[in-house]
Image (cartoon, rainbow, N blue to C red; front, side):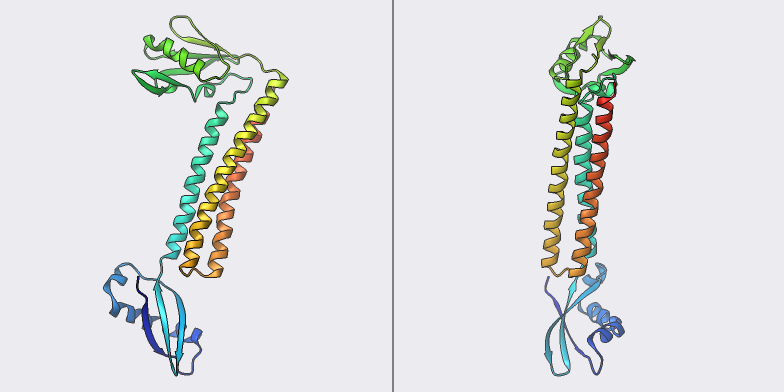
Length: 252
């Protein structure tokens, strides 16, 4: 966008006082300049001194939607982090604890009429007791495909069919196996954090572009702080989730 150049007379006033007292004058000039600027609700957020010619000063008044741009950066960062967190939660569900829960099978995919389909969409998954999961297919003929899908998920579970449903015995975990699962959970947490930090870098790159376009140093610093604040909040959520998972795994 081409800048709008206004010639104004400061008189005996300082630049800051003139801007404070003549905001309407500047707005009127912009209204006269272009109806489009009115329709886009122009905000005057920056005045850059270009040259001093006697009593006249030339200003470049930039159309600026940087506040909206900053909010978009924050919103996109939260959305991206939310996806990373959701993926991490899904991966944690695949790491079983000693107690049988339907969530153990959340990642299982089954070939159903030629398409890979989440198990929960074609069967009811529940627990019979603390050591047994039951899978009741909605269509009896899919029971073998469901058993195959559970085996292929490499969960260390062996489904047994009685012709009507699948029974899955969840064996108790050894101390060594528990520690292996905790290590795996922490590894997944670090992977998730890498994703969060990558999202932060992307947000900072966008902020750098705004700075190059004229974003003030103060706003830039505040925005960096906000981006870090958002990042820290999601890192904490990951730490909290893996802490709960570790306790769940180590509880006998």
